[in-house]
Length: 155
Image (tube, rainbow, N blue to C red; front, side, top):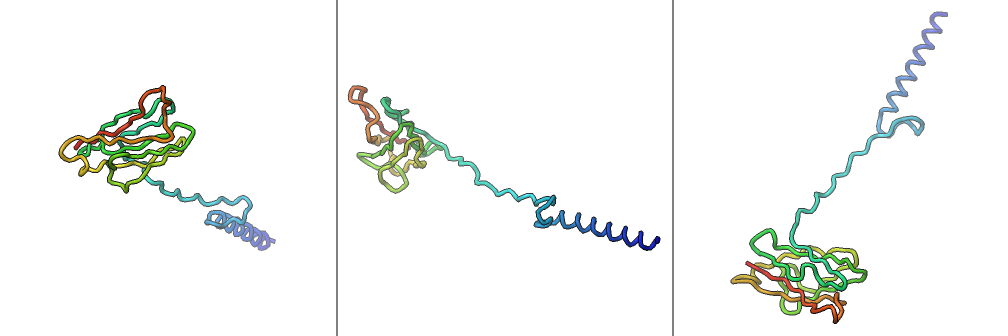
């Protein structure tokens, strides 16, 4: 009788040990009460540390600021546009392209920001220079005043 009780105890303890072992293994447990492995967090890209001037495109107001000043020799050599209106806005530089990036019109979707653009030091060597641009559709009505935004580039 004692031998039967001892065999029963060994079987029960073995079953419990096996259940604990399987529940602790990744992918184990078979779906009922076993713990699932903790996923390894995916590393996130570091937040952009790029800084500079952000120009808001504002309906009936124009650009804010209207005449930002960029300096090629400092960290304030970047610019981007934030479109706070309800329609796409196109930025077109009418005289010269002041940036290191490939030239072309900059389109900013409603509620979005453009990419950062970096002032080209070669374009402002020897002194400050103005780079006028237009925004279309226009941000101001003819009765609101002139719509003549520009970037002032300094060495």
